[in-house]
Image 1 (cartoon, rainbow, N blue to C red):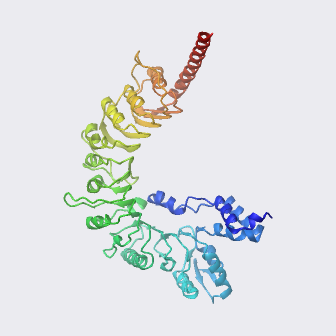
Image 2 (spheres, one colour):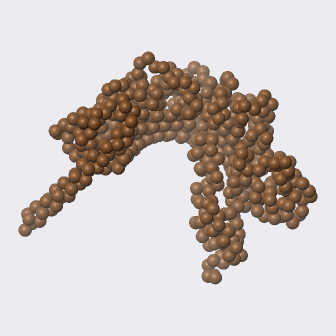
Length: 535
C-alpha cells in the first residue's frame, strides 16, 4: 500500500469525495414543505462500495464506517446491535439484560450518526422505553453527535426526547393523522408532546438552527415562544390540511402577536407558515432583518394581510399555496411589491375548497400594479387556471420592460376570448434576453407582418394556450422562427377544443432547418466576398 494511504487525513479526504456533499438538512430545508421525508442519500451501489472499502483494510475501515453510519433511515440498524432488542407484538422492545460489550459496540456506531430519520409507516414501531432505558445505561446521549433528527409521529408513536443532544442543528417533526380515527385524546396528546419537545429543545439545544413541524392540527401551545431560539435560520409550521386534506377546526395555527415576536429572530432566513385564519391587526409592520425565503399557505385574505405586514423585509423568494379563492385574491397579488424579489410562485393546493365564481375577469393592470415594481424578478410562476384575467398586448409589454432579468415566466389563467396576440411576444424578444421558458395564454392566429426581422433570442421552451385555427399553422410557425429560433419544445393547446396542437412543432422545426441553411449560405457568401475583396 502506498504510504500516503496510511495517513488518516489523506484517507479521510479521499472518502469525503465519495460522500454526497449536500447535507440531508439542506434537502429538508428545500423540500419539507411538501410533507415528504426523503430517504437518506446513499444509493445501494454507494453503500456496497463503502462496505467493500471497510472490509478492504484497517486503514479504510474507520472513514468508510463513518460514511455508512452517517445518515440512517431508521434507528433499527443501531438497535439490532443489541441482542435483547426483539420484536414483540409489532414493536421493538428491550426484552432482557443489556450486555456491556454490546453497549460498547452500540456506542462505537452511535457516535458516527449525524442524521436519523424515522418514518413510522415504513419501519418497525419502537417502544419509547427502549430509548429511555438505553440513555440510562449509557449514561451519555444516545447519539452524541446527532445534528439532524427527522421523526414521523402517529397516534402510536412519539418523539424520543432522549435523542435530542446539544449538537443538534435541525429537527423535523411530521404528524400523520388518520381523520377517521382522530379523537380529542389525540389532540391533547399532540399538544402535550409539542410542549415537552419545546422545553427539551430550550434546555438542551437552544442554538438549534432549523425547526420544521408539519401536520399540526390545533393552534401552537401558548407556552411555545420561538424567540428563545436566537440562532434559528429556518422555520416551518404547517397544519394537517395541506398534507391530509383535513380542515383546521376554526382559529389559526398561531396569532399575530406570535408573528410579531418572531420578527425579533435576527438570523431567520427561511419561513414557511400556514396562515389560515390569521389576520394582522391594523397596519402593523414586522421587519424580519434577514428573511429571504417565505412560503405561505392559506386563503388570499389571510395571505395578503401577512404579506402587507412584512413589506419592509428583504425577501427575495415568495411561494404561495392557496387553499381556495376569495374576493381578496386581487388584493393579495397587489401586496407583492418587494423591491428585492427574484422568485414568485403562486399555486392552488390540491385540496381547494371550491371553484371560484367571478362575475367579471380581474383586470391585469390592477394585478400588475405592485409586481411591476419588482425590477429584479427572475422567475414568475402563477398557476391559477380557474382565475379569469383580462390581459392585452400592452400588459405583456409592461411586464417585459419591467423585468429585464426574467429567466422563467409561467402565468396560466383563464383568458378571455381575446388573449394577448403573438405580436406581444416581440416584447420578450427585445427586453428579456435571458428568458429561457415562457408559458402564457396567447393567440397565435394572426398573419406575419412584412417588416419582422430575425432574432437570435435563446428561448428554448414555449407553452401557449388560446384560440387556434389550423389554417394559421404556417404563419404561427413563421412568427416563432423569427422571434425565437432556438426553441426545442412547443406546446400549444386549443382553448376551444381543449386539445393539444401536435403539428405546430413539426412545422416550426422544418422552418428552423430552412433558416439554418439560409444562414449558412449567407455566411459563406459573406466570407467569399471578403476573400475576393482582399484579393
